[in-house]
Image (cartoon, rainbow, N blue to C red):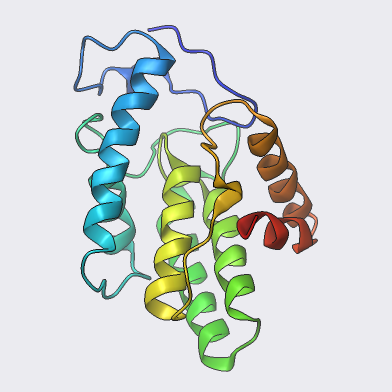
Length: 194
């Protein structure tokens, strides 16, 4: 497999490609199609019945497995290597637990409006980059789950386009995440409802 990655995407390490469950896939377009089919099934599942205990390591891992388990053998397992983005891989469980505690506090104290709580959570989850692949898609679905089940809000629209492919919409999303890296959340808050 020789995949071309859009800007901001995390390349899959050669050893991680060994975990591909569908050996007939040879292009990024094919991979995206199979992954999206799996993700759509996961979305149908999580929004068909109330989700509980969503701010836990167990839930985060099981959601990733639901989203990618038909495509990748390592779906639901935290990465065990360094990437072009993300924290030190050995710190993933600790930093996730800290994030969950913070989000629960934000919700309890109403530290931010609901959209901002979910957008900040999304940004931090992407920055942690817990998995070998699919972190942006996973973090977007997690943010929507927080919006719907913890904050009682409608899920985000995320620019109303496919953010996997290189596009102006994806570029706006990447720029919004980079602004959030500098503590400017306005572009991300605008984007999630665009």
